[in-house]
Image 1: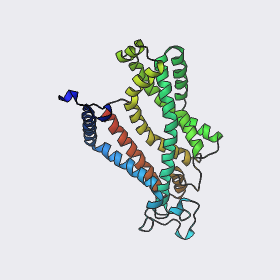
Image 2 (image 1 turned 180 degrees about the vertical axis):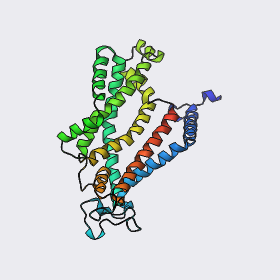
Image 3 (image 1 turned 180 degrees about the horizontal axis):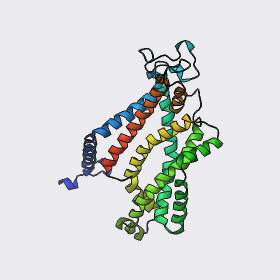
Image 4 (image 1 turned 135 degrees about the horizontal axis):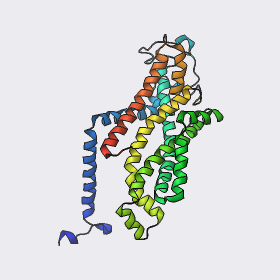
Length: 303
């Protein structure tokens, strides 16, 4: 019996393992190409380390109780040492422990903001490009209007009206962050709606939703992935800026921006109270930016 006549149980064709093997081979080749980009690998390492530190903060921090309203005036303003790796703050709390817990707040902000803004921006961008006409004009002119307002000024206006906390900071940043994704995906989708495969799907009687979700959106995934990764670092910086100005997460919750703001009052004598949280912000942003740049080169997309 020939190979073409051979069938696997449950009606599966014999070429199914070959297909799986081919997919695995393609993934291996893609991973190999990614690992050739050393800066991308460094970025991935940094991002993974930040994620692990945030997830396992109670196990990795030497003084987890210092993440709350803990006070130890005998150890206040202690310089970096073996006991306190990054020193202590003005009330004797271990800065290293608070930085690790601060990563939890920063990553929660990233997840919340991008989970809200990315779907909204992508959907509106694709709808504007696909529908055209007055729908396109309304969506894109509203988008242009918001882009004309300085992001920080808009965020400050929103957070000054709402009570300063993590949820309201997410709302404020999300309100302005979807614009960038909308503009990017609109530009990309506008070039896709004229492609032959989209026209073929339209002529075959496919619904609008099918064309948007099955034909256009999959071709935007690479750009969305790169943009989202790059945005993660900017969201951390933006959230830290709001907290630095007193409009983000409030004490005693450990937040990197708040720690920099408090520590700046004691510069230059107790420099570690502002420098250490600042370096932690830099470390996280650098990781996401390096990873995003690596993905951009890997997918060969413009964002």
